Length: 262
Length: 377
Image (cartoon, rainbow over all chains, first blue to last red; front, side):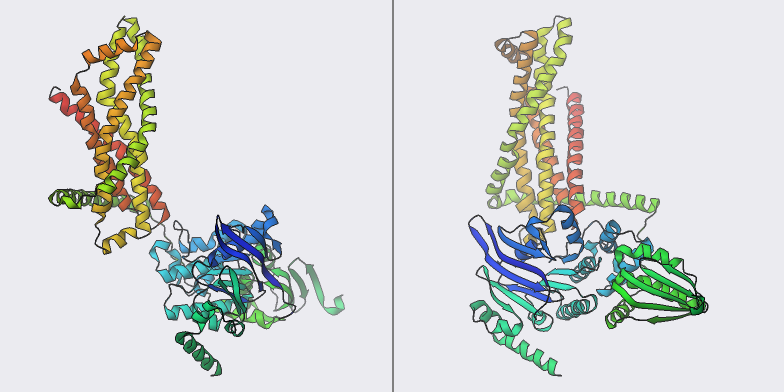
């Protein structure tokens, strides 16, 4: 869509470790309010790209812009402010094991705002419920949670500050199919209601078919296909062929189209 | 102004208040977000509802969940006191309100406070459990040990030599350093006292016996406990967190065979050798100090050492090695297996491993002293 605001822009990103080149002049952008998917073979550097967006890793060369900040030149204060405006859901949750779920969610609220304990508690409870966890889960430690509950709790933590930007690293991996679809619906709902921009690494065909607006396919150190599902499907890159043009993927797509018609 | 019926008008960053005779109009303005919530809350708390409240949201810039929750709280409060009418909200804000209302749970998050006696009882019971587990562990290690010899082809030479290198050979530098210094200190401290009695040459007896029999084994064991015991705990603990131990078990690899026995046996071989090494370096240290302080030449020192140091002292020191090694390796591995899947536990167990093994090494040394004195050796 023309005139849309770019929330993230990666320009000619190069990432290499010694001789190994992971990204070779890779570029992409994410519009405001979009659910953007990053897809690719394992080893294509999806997680590395995400890490470069959230300032955990510096690209070897190239420029990354996030919410109007040029990450290579950002100062400490700006970086701290930027970090408050996003939420990150790590692949395995990365909840702090020494804190309960409720404490995990309340951490940033207590550190960065002056809200009273009652309001903090209310926000925490709302977030817990929003991600589909029962209130009693708030008192549990991460080691007492199942894999799916960890994902949910980690999402609740990522949402604690009402972020403008949400980064999700394989949000539906490790969830049962029903849980995964609920998770998708939840992400969609959050985008609708909070206007959050979502960047997600995913392998989940159903997520790509149902909630992702635009996505890029990473292979051979580049973005080999980019755009809406229709755009990507026009590509004849071997990975796109393999991933989308097999019987299983086609059937899934037909089903989605049927569901849309109904 | 009175013609319009406005009695009072208040401007606030986030709240414009019009108090009329029959109604109060609240204009929400600006950013009703998390960071501003405490300020808005204070302003809202001051409002005295009259007969009717009209709450207008048409001038609000942004509204996040903290803002909406705050609105909900006061909306409900005002509703019990008077009529409240909400106007000017957008469709988006209404959807957000409905979402948060749906997820607003009355149920409290249970507290996890534990009383003093509860905690005390819990830690005593936990200690008892650890003791039982250690008995189980000792039994297990003994059985595996015996099975090693029944089926010597199970003997894991590669791992054992690897651990001898890691825990033994690589520890030589630090052990040389510590035992040289300890030998030197012993000589220096006693030199002054001995010189008073003109008993200079007895420094050789004193240093020789105390180093070989007590100091070298103890120093070596403490260094190894800090160096290798903690490493064993951390390694095995990390393997437990990443479920490598579970994976080994499912493949039929007994962790006792593959992880614990090789480490224990390696340390039992390495520690006596290290003690021997520490003996030599420690005596060199005291020789060095003796020549500096008392002008006893190296030749004199060695001649005297040959005369007075009976070989039994040396052997007693060496014999302690395997016992100390077994304690250190067993405690290290046992603590590693106790690691649960949270990050704090690995640090706790590593500390406990070092503290326990140093304590048990010293206790074991005391036991040696008592028994050997009773036997008159």
